Length: 116
Image (cartoon, rainbow, N blue to C red; front, side):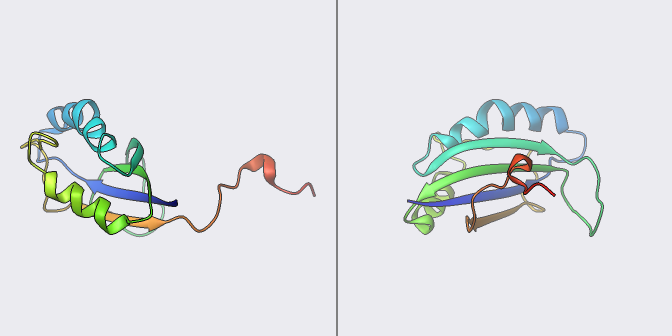
């Protein structure tokens, strides 16, 4: 089984952060991980930018496990804004980016560093 990270950079409409965050955290994450191929989800809020620029202050990272990533993503978009995956009208889809990255290494932890 191949493993992926799907990164979703998102943004609410101006002044609708609370509504957006309530929906995303309490509805949308669960809806997505209920879909075939999705294993887990976690959200983040931008703290700072050290290099480059950003358009979005929110990030969700999904663990995807599948041998057919195109089918998983196609299905996700097919059920978007249906009873299976309702969307919030606080969600500003225009600046949203969705990217799928395939895992190429395992996770390296600090405790795994060679001793000097």
